[in-house]
Image 1 (tube, rainbow, N blue to C red):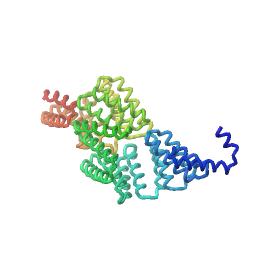
Image 2: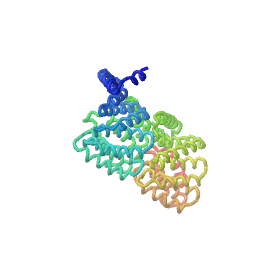
Image 3: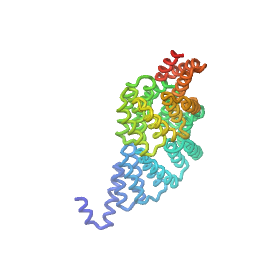
Image 4: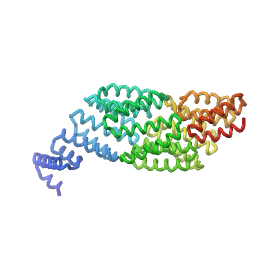
Length: 445
């Protein structure tokens, strides 16, 4: 009926009706999307664009990504002439693309938003997000350069600087620059604390849990991930629960508690899928496949691993493609197909430039396969490369194990010393899987 009545109104009267409805909604705090549409129908494109930006941001916070994208697109389509409003609309739409795995579209919108951004803090925020997207999808070194630009652009704005420094610290961590990462995490924590940014503080706690885990402190990482996941849950930040839950499950596998780990990765996978979080789902599929293999469910693990590789390739995420391929290799070992495992690890290695953790794992695991095939000379090269791929990283447990396997097989004079040292480090860090095998090797020398 309302549409029929509107059709009988002349354009001027119709616009006036929409204007009055918009004013009523604004005065009563009505839904921003309805306000936007009435503003647009009244001819107030500037007010409509601002309302679309508000409505899109609200939907984004509620993880209604498709609705957020549509609202942002509607705001852009009406021809927002305020650069900051257009920049905000593009930024929101970019985030919806990123969550659903369309990283090229996300970067395109972020670049366009950067053109329209007029304040330095806004430019810094956009550069920071571009750095975060680039880190896993494209190149860690390039991501570091973008984070440095974001830090410079932030100038004296503590919130913008905190975010930029935080992302730069994440890049440092992934490049095995432990001291630089810790110094930047500390700086970012102080800035977030000063600004009263509780979400930022939680991000630092999450990053430090990942840092502890990534640098081989498995027991500590497992404990920290539990606390961080609960913190994100208490804050209602569902998207951020996925990574600590899933990575905790992966850590429990290394700690010899695969069945417990399976509960974590299964829950994380369900959550990632319910949120339409494609990047997170690819990561969890990697973890979940390795944990399933550790639980003796190799065929199911292969299905999961294959799905992970396919998803990571579809969204063109180089980091998760490398990791899911590495996970597929682990699964193929569990299935007894060493040739398929070697192929998966080699495919992973081809993607690991500037991804030192995945490079270390792939070299170490490929060395293990070659040793099982009595290809000791080839294995030796991969052992050396694994040991050189970041001395402080989690994958070093498997690199040292491969070195010990090689030394024992060859009857090297220092085999016993190597095994004893590797076993000491594995037990200290909580890497039970390698410790158990090293103990067996110790009985052979």
